[in-house]
Length: 227
Ligand code: ADP
Image (cartoon, rainbow, N blue to C red; front, top):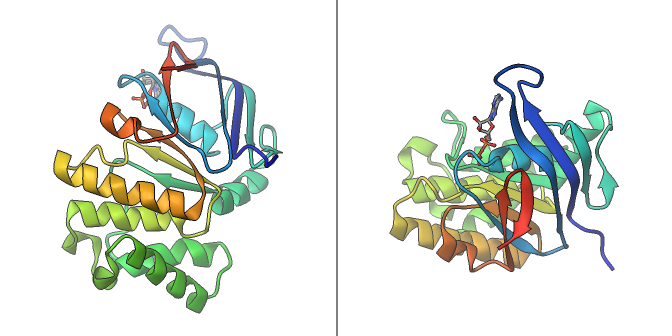
């Protein structure tokens, strides 16, 4: 059996701990994603979805509990090991594209690959391949401001997949688009994820989109529960 792409076990997180404003966001959240599995996470705003995604993606550390990526335990590992795993194994997509405005679409997908040790030639070839798959190859030389919202988000998908991650984490990836564009861009994302065989945890408010995934879970009272 292949390793779980992501395993969260008993994850706890409290902000402003020990102060009157203490917020207990995660209270023993556990979730396992099999290799190639697509899971939707639904919850109201403020339930802790971003917190959980940041912990899963090694951008933040839990107060207690375990995080493993591809079977490798990450809790308590040094920063350098966590950074390496994050760069190589995890791709992020946010509600807003967060592309670098002064660089072209192509460069935005090339740069993370250079940071991960790829040659410029390899990185450009891969970037063009990814842009072609999401139907934006003709816009490769455009800066983000010259792209539509849907195109910007497609480029952001390519950037997230640039280093061939095993795990994709997405926080309301189409939440900023109008409904028609959202459905279309989400379809592109699903195709890309299925084609590349990676696992994905996608937070969304959109139940119709959530139903297209392999499994839907909800985050309630700091824990993950089936829907
Ligand atoms: P969601 O993504 O589901 O909207 P978040 O994970 O962003 O939820 O936030 C969960 C709760 O934690 C919210 O009440 C939010 O205000 C609080 N929170 C998030 N980040 C911080 C922080 N850095 N400091 C204090 N409270 C925070």
